[in-house]
Length: 327
Image (cartoon, rainbow, N blue to C red; front, side, top):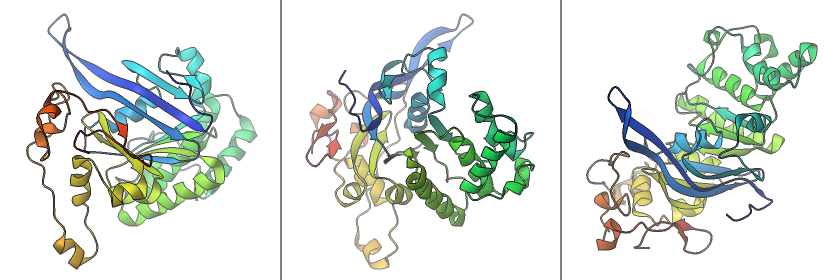
């Protein structure tokens, strides 16, 4: 395995995450759900890597593997120079304070019985970073940092709006001053007007605190706005990685082109003239994915080799990586 660069926060190499399928009284293993199937990428310091794809393609599982909420089936996850993929829990705990997570649903990710102040302060208690008056002071600072009034610290989650709850989740994620934050669709459950506020807040905090983001989302317009680079996933594999503007101006993989063709453009003349790419069939099951390139049963450009051999993720110039024999 190559040594990670000094300017890289996370390096993922050949990551696999298979969930076993068991049956019968003895729970005999009969197969695997191949949620993440041999992917590699890196996230550089202070950058935002967007991760996009259809539901069920493995985006959230990838984020949870990096956080080590799941222990990967195989592969390597190097975080700040340390391989954490198989690290025991006692050694992993000190590193957890350097990672934060913002979850998709602000309604279910907060304990309804705790006050907002105690929710934000919990990570500081768990990692023994503050207590007593110092704990209250740091929680107040975190509330102000995300645009909340510290006077709301004694309220419980149901007294907040969806946008305010997500701000509480963000304050909790930043409590231990992490270097990496996994944003797992943090705005998909919010109103459109609130989405823009949260995105702007994330960008401000990145500049102010020096954060690195893995931003998981469905909304391609949002991902383009906030990301430096974008990785496109399909059925557990990454099919294309490149800079944000480059992906939208010059998509190379047939799946990426199909995704972008579904994004509406606020110009009736352009929208009328452009060609919509409609994919045939359904997304195959991750229990029994197609051989070769996973996308070949739905691809209009597929040839014989696509159903036999897996295309490697290769650089086609300008740090534009794509996994397709036809490019």
